[in-house]
Amino acid sequence: MSEYIMLLLKLVIPILAAIYTINFGRWLKKQGSHSGAIGAYLWALLCIAAPAVVLWYNR
View 1 (cartoon, helix red, strand yellow):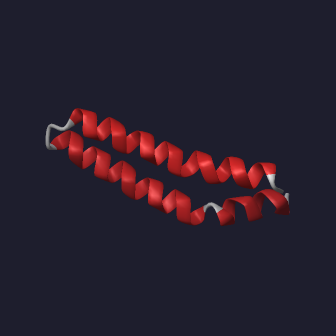
View 2 (cartoon, rainbow, N blue to C red; view 1 turned 90 degrees about the vertical axis):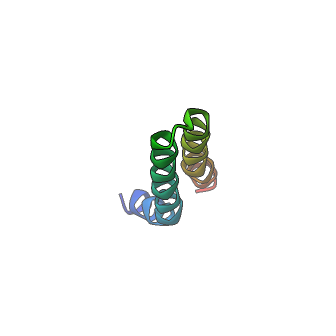
């Protein structure tokens, strides 16, 4: 169990970066840039997925 807690703690910074990026995507969508919003959402997904996969496989 503590292994999963440590994994989550290591992902705090990427999660915060993803939250910021998602909010930026929401702002872009409000401004009318739908393709920019989609790009921001994809970056947010990548921001979480890449470190999570690396940490998962190197545990």
